[in-house]
Amino acid sequence: MAGKRSVIPFGPQHPVLPEPIHIDLVTEDEKVVEAIPSIGFIHRGLESLVTKKDFNDMVYVAERICGICSYGHGYGYVDALEHIMSIEVPDRVQYIRTLLFELSRLHSHILWLGLMADAFGFESLFMETWRIREKVLDMLENATGGRVIFSILKIGGLRRDVPDEVMKGFIPELDRIAEEIKACEGAFLLDPAVQSRLRGVGYISGKDAERLGCEGPFLRASGVEWDNRTRGYAAYGEVDFEVITSKEGDSYGRCEVRIKEIYQSISIIKQCIEKMPAGNHSVPVKGFPNGEHMTVIEQPRGGACYYVHSSGKKFIERMRVRTPTFANIPALAETLKGCDVADVPILVVTIDPCISCTER
Amino acid sequence: MRISKSPWLLHYDGSSCNGCDIEVLAATTPRFDVERFGIINTGNPRHADIFLCTGGVNSQNQDVVRQIYDQMPDPKVVLACGICACDGGIFKECYNILGGTDTVIPVDVYVPGCAVRPEALIDGVVKALKILDEKADKMKHGGYRSLTSAEYAEKLKEGENA
Ligand code: SF4
Image 1 (cartoon, helix red, strand yellow):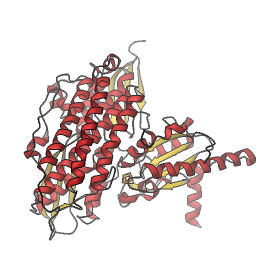
Image 2 (cartoon, chains in turn brown, red; image 1 turned 120 degrees about the vertical axis):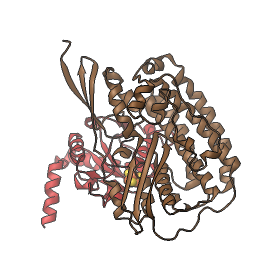
Image 3 (tube, protein in one colour; image 1 turned 90 degrees about the horizontal axis):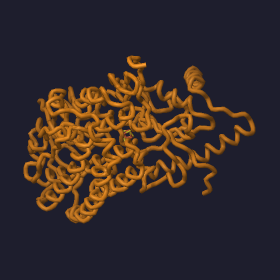
């Protein structure tokens, strides 16, 4: 019965998705011919809170744009305000911020590996990666006091200092994590059964990925060198790292990029600890912000922009966030075309969707 | 404590920020490992005993929450995970947030925290187990049945008018 089309709804509540997104899959036999995403299940209207909450308290709201990349959201907001208010934060703060940023990238990427393993049906690998992730969370908890939402950032620095001994203690722990990831790596990249699920699935060329405005590992997996960390915000200008890309352009490539980025994050964290300058953990902040600024940073899922506009009052007038998942959804709809229905969960997971960022 | 059954969980992310969701997932993974008691995170409402709802309710997802709840067989227990699900939390003043989970379905256990810690969550599930047993008992003896979401809405309205 070729040529007969039917629509299969996917989501909002679906076993592979921790978050609600709804996609209408128009299928012909087992092939998807069109995918129509619809969003809005998590829209809270968070940006409007800027007019109700003090600009200092807004940091905590910004962190709750998303619980996985929460640190980055807090950073983007704080950085925009520090630019507006011309606050110079001490070097130590920049280094600690970079360190925490990479730790949260580490936990986010490991989390993604787990979700990916779950999507292609390798449950014990999922459990193993999440076990490793707990170690990263322990470090974050040691440094900040929180497991997923840290609330350590404030305008003008950090709410508390992270002692040098604590950070030194991270180094052996990081080595152990690198070893354990190394042990899992084979399952993701060399196992023939896993490769049969990943290779060639959801291919997108570098040109198309750029044209559709993709971001982050999804874009880099198609061979495009684009990483906002090279702009050198926080202490990224002072540490060594290279933009990681892959030539594959498919789900396998996305796996490869993220695994390599895990090692890269570990190396950046170690460099930060080695170079950690002494100094204060915050500077006093006076007055109200007046002006506007756009901060661009590299979140675990890709580039994110934070725009803040204020006019010298206690409440900010407008905050706008653009998140990487939003940028990746058009490409997701594109890659879904022509894939098998059974591959849909894998493809959705490869963009590392973070719906609560997207909808706020 | 003796566990009389291994309940299956169903998790739905209302309008949470994800912080609570990943903690719910983390509770099933090796560090906390509730799976060793046979507590499984299922994706199917028809198989579930305990409904873990994270995040507040907004106008888009209220029907989804109701539907999931109504599809679950009796006895069932609803757990509001995180302060958002308890009463709206930090997003309470947002224009699209109607309130906590209990604005649309009856909630049995409230687990606070932002984000909710897996330990707290496990404690909540243990409490839920007791309630589950009580409900099962009532069903055996008196033909007990949970309120449907429509009946619950009715009841809320009466409460407002009274
Ligand atoms: S309670 Fe906190 S962590 Fe949980 S969903 Fe709400 S804002 Fe996020």
